[in-house]
Image (spheres, rainbow, N blue to C red):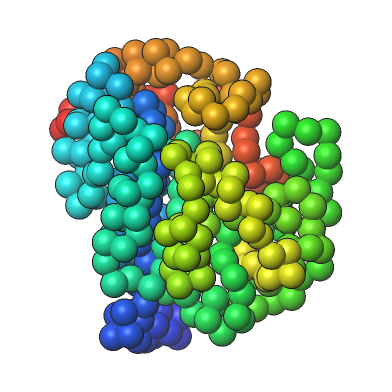
Amino acid sequence: MTKKHIIIAVSLFITNMLQGKNVDLIIFSYNRPLQLYAVLEGVQKYFSNLHNTYVLCRADQEYEKAYQEIQNSFPCVQFLKQGKNPRNDFKPLFLQCFFGSSSEYILLSVDDIIVKDYVDFNICIDALETSNAYGFYLRLGTNITRQYGQNLSLSIPPHEKAQKDIYKFKFKDGKGDWAYPHTVDMTLLKKTDVESFFKKSVYSSPNTLEAHWAQTANLDDYGLCFHTSKTFTLPLNMVQQDWYCSHENSFNTNDLLAKWKSRLKIDNDQFEKIDNDCCFMGYIPTFITRSQDL
């Protein structure tokens, strides 16, 4: 980073702090300690200028110890745990995270995301505000040319440079992931643009939230993305029960819990700046030993 870029970054940071233009991250997690640990490691390493990080989690009894160990490893992360009636308490807990601070922006994520490159959220906020775009999509980039789970090639929609390394596109000009603005896979949004839906809509899980939210999308809106995507989904297993996805069964939850109990973790370094062509990567990762500080 040059001296000029450092000065710009510091200036944006001070301006955003004074104006309350911060970003809160909410991660949804259910019985996936191994994957949650991986995404939190990636967030810690690659993301800068995040305000609060929340984990809204659901853990069956055999997973509770693993989640507590992760909470101990990331003491600055705020964990909100669902109880015996998870479908009843999901929305209230989500809204508690959403309105938990004065931050103007929210970043939504599920727990099987891999962060592969650096992101400064002050730069993302500035790009959103100067371009008048609806959202910033960390999973998209000019490398995304294939739709996961389908024999479908994706043409990159017409786009223009919004800022250095950042591009603006219209959803209706794209297909597949390029035409899907309401995703919870690392999407940055202004709270005031979405709070009405989140307050009024009926949903009981991340999947039902996204499904209902998708029906309200305005494809005439614009999105932003970096030249190359910064995150992708690593679909090792399926835990949600709202619908069946046959392509998410590389492991079952017990397999991955056993790896966690054996002090293993996903080796995030294997994915650094990987040139993926799809928002999802059907890939069996390397597992390595975690440190002994848990």
